[in-house]
Image (cartoon, rainbow, N blue to C red; front, side, top):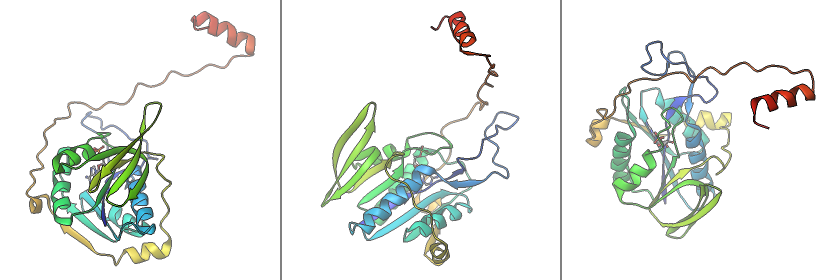
Length: 248
Ligand code: AMP
């Protein structure tokens, strides 16, 4: 079985994003970029499935600028076998990503597609669901546990207050939640090996997908600045202040 893992290059999760002065978006100039954390979890899960002998090839795919190659090399260093870069400098919305992934799904015929539940830059949480709709395949979103068993996959889903277990017929679309696994670090020898693994470069036009935006972002703003706290001398003063606020 082949596993397809879409990985997005996003602003590193340790970086505090700065909003551009004109409010049109987030300033990405000279900002550290990395693989979307949920996609690292997806790559890790694909590798674990392969290590368990239930998959024989992992294909990583990224849609984005030439630099998204670095993200794909990270996936290859972790353990993916080959990669596809769909190169574009346009801002690509989840629907266009899902349409490109559908075309790749049809060409590659994977048994499983594992995506992140959301990209931490746009927080859309849409691509996996749209891909499932476009391909007509079952989806198991917010996966906490993934178990392949013959021609089906059992996914424990993180839902409010607990877990829901669903059984999907393969091929299926799974999206990862935070507690699915802890991704490995790529070792230096594997980083070196990844440089010679195959990486194909394509364009959205190769898949016949129109990537023109359907949305206009009208404004992006910083969250309100938090008010400074105050220090109290002792517990009595703290209790008095809480009482004065009327919350105790
Ligand atoms: P989103 O719907 O934008 O929150 O993204 C959900 C997931 O879709 C991500 O975690 C990735 O697995 C995948 N994805 C979204 N955009 C891209 C992209 N440009 N390239 C590759 N994968 C993507």
